[in-house]
Image 1 (cartoon, rainbow, N blue to C red):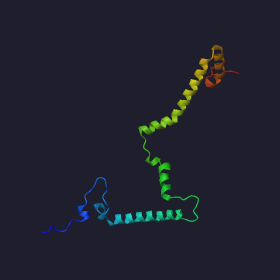
Image 2: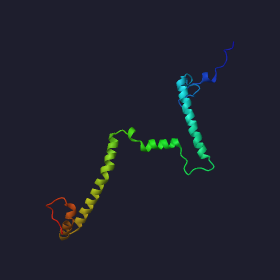
Image 3: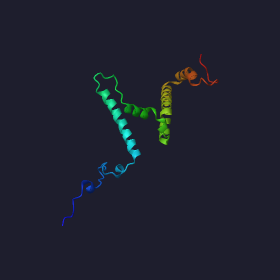
Image 4: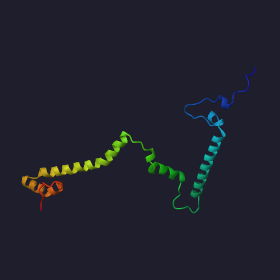
Length: 150
């Protein structure tokens, strides 16, 4: 006795973790509501229209100086100019903001202070007093008691 017809490819198909399920075998695609089909058709029409517009610009015998891809322009805008709606303040972003805002100021203060200290340590006492008097107006300009040089 014959066992019957052999199973079809769709019946014999078993899911594989390395390959996604084909759309023909995916149960989410063949029982779709008319609204979802209409929305998908609209998206495909928009995508096809934008692709055709870009291909016409690309294959134009007299091309413009810059060929703009509207999808690329939208992506670049969303990536660079429109960050605030999607920005989340976290400890990392707060730390990086403080580091880039205050870090250079602290760095240059330390560099100038180290340079000044190294210059003062190489001088003898009389030269150090002259330098202190000359630089007093720069260092203590806000202090009314500090000696002013004329």
